[in-house]
Image 1 (tube, one colour):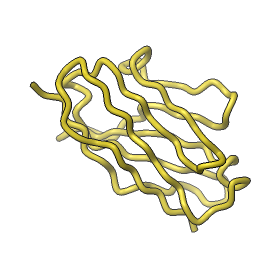
Image 2 (tube, rainbow, N blue to C red; image 1 turned 180 degrees about the vertical axis):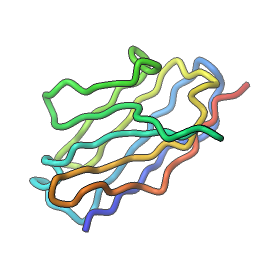
Image 3 (cartoon, rainbow, N blue to C red; image 1 turned 60 degrees about the vertical axis):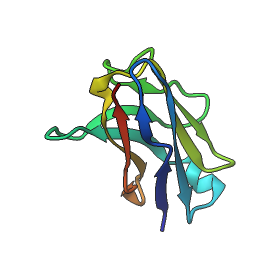
Image 4 (cartoon, rainbow, N blue to C red; image 1 turned 60 degrees about the horizontal axis):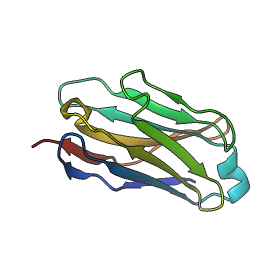
Length: 120
């Protein structure tokens, strides 16, 4: 059974950067390589939305229009991690960020979320 844990959230000023990390345990490197990994976020009073998604190393990820050019998702199969580098942060990026691991066999596994607050 996979376990997903996010880290790296915090308070940052507008225009600043943060790097979120998501660690997946309880699976082999091979199994992890087959996971589709994604980051979602949910602002206060808003629905959860997809931010970025990556299937495997070497395959182009996809991003929400609102974060294109500012956020970068990366996957490391050896470490079983997926990171989200967030640059040029805006107040509207404030949300709880969730990591999701998906496979056909296991379905969706969510982390507990990490708070990102962009404020001066």
